Image: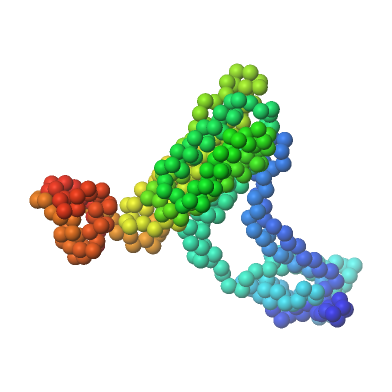
Length: 395
C-alpha cells in the first residue's frame, strides 16, 4: 500500500481534526552510571522501552471553528486512555500529555492545535504480581553482575605479568578446589569445574593481561558451581557458594611503590568482583530453593544478606545501589509474603524414645521419622535420650 492510500483523517475519541504535521518518538529508558576518575565509557543500564509518543500539529478553520475547538478540548481533558486514529500510524490507544491551542489576529477564523499523545495500555498492568520472587532476585543478580563487571573493568589496569597477581589466582584456585573436594558433584560437572579452576593458574599470563577474559572466567566458575551443586542436591549449596564471597585473595601486593599500588588496585578489583559473583549465585540459590520451615528459609537468606551488608559498607555509589537492590529483592522473595511454611519448635521428652515413636507422637505420622533424624543429626534412631532438646516442625 502506498503512503497516499494509507493516509487518512486524524481523530481522537471519535472527534476529527485536520493535521498538517505529525511525529513519532520512542527509544529505550537508560540509567547512565559514571565512574569517578575513570577514562572508560560509562556503564549504561537498559531499563526497558521508553514508550512512544505521537506529537501532532493541526488546525480548525471556518466561521464555526470555536465550536470545534471547544469540543476537542473537552475530549482531551477527559481522564483515562482513548483511541487515536493517526494519519499514518493508524489506530493507537493513548493518553493525552500536553496540548496547546493558538489563535492570532493575523489569521482570523483559524485555530492551530498542538497535542502530545502518549501510547499506553488500555488497562493498568501490574507486572510485579506475575513475577516470582526468584525472578525478582534473578533480575537483581543480573543488574549486580553488570554493575560489578563495569566497576571491575574500570578499576583493573593491564600490567605486565606479576608473581603477586599470579599468587592471587593460585589462592582462588585453591579455594575452588577445596569446595569441589568437599562436595559430591556429578562426574561431568566436577571435570568441567576442575578444568576451569586449573586454567586460573595455567593461563594466568593470558588472563592477567585480559580483564574481560578474567572476569568471564570468574563468572563461569561461580555459575558452574551453582548449577553443579543444584544438580548434586548439595545439603549446603549456599554456604558453599559463599566461600567465594568470603575469599580474600591471599597476600596482597605491597602498595608502597607506584607499580605496587597498581598491582594492589588490580588485586582488590579481582577480590571484590569474585566476592560479588559468589554472593549473586548464593542469592539466586536461596531464592530458587524449597524449604521445610520458615526458620530454614530465613536462616539461608540471612547467610547471604550478611555478606551483602559487608559489601554495602565498603561499596561506591553505584555498587551500593545494585547491592541494596539485591538485598531488598531477596528479603521480599524469601520466604515470601504468602509463605505458609511451618516454624521450628523445640520439644523435650522426659524419657528415652525411639525416633519412630517420636514422629508418631509429634506428627501422627511414623513415616516422618527420617525427617526428625536428619534435622537433629540423631546417630541412633532407636535411642533419642530423654531430656535432650529436639527440633520439630509446627503443625
